[in-house]
Each structure stands twice: as structure tokens, then as C-alpha cells.
Length: 271
Ligand code: GRF
Image 1: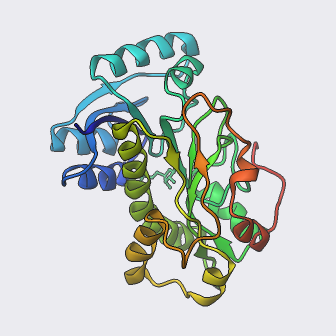
Image 2: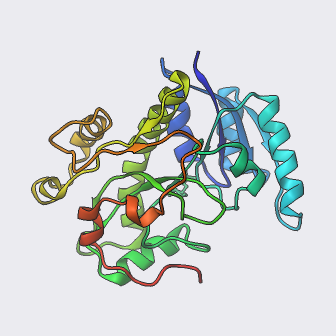
């Protein structure tokens, strides 16, 4: 039985599309609901086109508790077991976080724990990366807690920052990797949920990989797939993220040390 999944999105939904495309093949995930806090966004159109149910649940100007109650009711109606945030710009209500322990993922377009926090979304993230002089960026997928971007890290993939990069150019390079990494990470989580097993984190690329492998889009998919199979070549370490009742370690301790050594640590976002 595939796992019923809901995606939360506030914008165009290119990540939602990559998840939809993945779920349409023979996988452990079944897309049952798209939740947006805004009407008339691209993600809603994509859902309608794919025949996926939608709910617009406004957040602005409402008590978070009320939003939580409405959201939980929708999730229950569709039997949702896993939630994937894909460009969702709102805080997930605490009651939803509590009802889905280690069952909510978010994708962020930079290497957390740097370049995250409230207000760090869209171009601001890539501007901050460029201003810091970092030579590496790349998407982070993390479990969602009650704050912005602080839940434990599930998967990251390094993407080079190149001379002459603008926020637009860097965003496009990172997005290309997001579209490969997120479906594989979501599938990995759903497979564990389906089997009632604990979730093992994919092997993160180690230092040798970072130094020896130039960024090559055609090779990416197979490299990332290998990481999810736990390939020894790429493995820096592979840990078991325990069952839902396990306490979550802080994000910083979960990040690949090779990645974290390669980027400067400016003060966190929160403008
Ligand atoms: C992506 O860059 C994602 O990392 C961030 O929001 C953006 C959403 O883009 N959380 P899209 O709507 O999926 O195209």
C-alpha cells in the first residue's frame, strides 16, 4: 500500500511538480492533497491538472491554532501520513507538527544550518550565500519542527558557487538538484513509513567526493540515487534517525561535517 502524501506550497510549485511526476510512477508515495495558504498560485493549477485534491487554507490574520485545526481536519479527511513542504512560506501550526512526528519534510535552497531562518526564502537566500563568499551551496531537506529551518537534517547535496554567479543563476543551479533530491528523499521516507521501519538517513557526500567531482548535471541523478542506496563511495556516514518517538538532535549536528567545513558561517537569517 502506498503512503498518502500531502504537499504544502505557496508558490509556483516546481518542486511539487517533481514530486507529482515521481509519485505517478510505481512508488511508495501517493499524492492525495495539495494545501496552499494562497489562492491562484501555480501549485494549485498543477494539482488541478494532475487531478489532485486541493485546499486553500489562509493563514494571514488568523490565529495559528485555528489554522492548525482546519489543516488537521483536511489531512485527516485524506488519510495523509506524510507531509512535504515545497515552497510553503508559513510556519506549520504546532498541533500539526505534533501530530506528524518525523513525518514532515521541508526543502530549503541552501546548506543549513547556515542561510536559514525566518525571512530567508527566495532570492534572499542566494544573495546571502553570494555575499558570504561561500564556494558551496545546495539544497537541504530537513524534518520540520515548530521553528523555521531548524529541524534535523535529512539530506543535503553540494552545488558549487561559481565565479560570475548572480542570485538567479545560483538559484537555477540549486533548483535543478532540488528536483532530483526531493523526490528521492520523500520516497525514502515513505518506504520506511510503509514498512513501519525507522528512517535511515542517506549517505552524505564526503570530502573526497566534494574535491574530486566537478558539478555535472547528467551524472547527478545516479550519484544521488547511489547515496540513497547507501553507496560506500559516497558515504561519509549513515545514521539511523530513530522511530517517531526519538528526540530530534539539533540540525547543526546532523549536517555533513565536510559540507559545513566548506562554507563560512555568517550570522543566521532572521531579518
Ligand atoms: C525552492 O527553492 C525551495 O527550496 C524553497 O522554495 C522554493 C520553491 O520553489 N523552499 P517552487 O515553488 O517549488 O518552484
